[in-house]
Image (cartoon, rainbow, N blue to C red):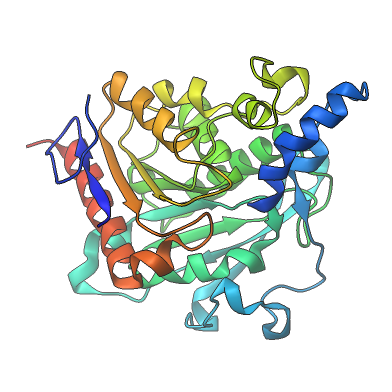
Length: 317
């Protein structure tokens, strides 16, 4: 049975009291440190370049892309990020639905994982769109058609520019912007919430805690991540600063971001700091198949419920 519920709010059943490259990065850390090369940053990013997005022939079956969003509702976006590099994204508008007024008014800024490019995550955009949300997804520098090279600083700059774009749109309500981060994107979304603009809510799927945790998994027990990674990826430090409700959704069998070393410590930190926390632990799911194992209707409803909770927390009784 899936563990699910909410803490520091209305309790539910099973509430806890008071990508492949990233898993390999911990093992690589041991090698590079012993070899005198003190960075694993290049192993954190696995981009694929393209000259066009969303071509059916470029999609792999396990990405679960269904092409359900009408082309008329998909707006290509080009932005200028750090170093003058152009990055690319898509703003997706929902179909008007009088039964989904809150969802239709909410914009989800989606920060994707470390592999491939936007194409890899378009199936997730479709699920958010089907839940009724506006969605903006962007490619980090070096991914897809975006210029430059990926790094933590570049990812953060790309996210800030993307947020500025969303907040500048006349059809986006500033107080109804939520952040979603999957895998590596959990670091980016949490950074935005803690260091930039507080969102309506923060949704973290298959999150990593920190580069230090990845290093420890590689056998370098007690060696801080900064000694082998320049990337400022540290959800453990930033979660206390997000100042908004947080949803953690992850697979109980995640072999990459192992829950006991990543999601669960983050949940404990969030609870300790009094954040309103929603937990969706999906039995049998791994790192990449949470929506599939959870069930698409259940996944979409969990996101709607969380956004409703965030909106209620904002407006009060």
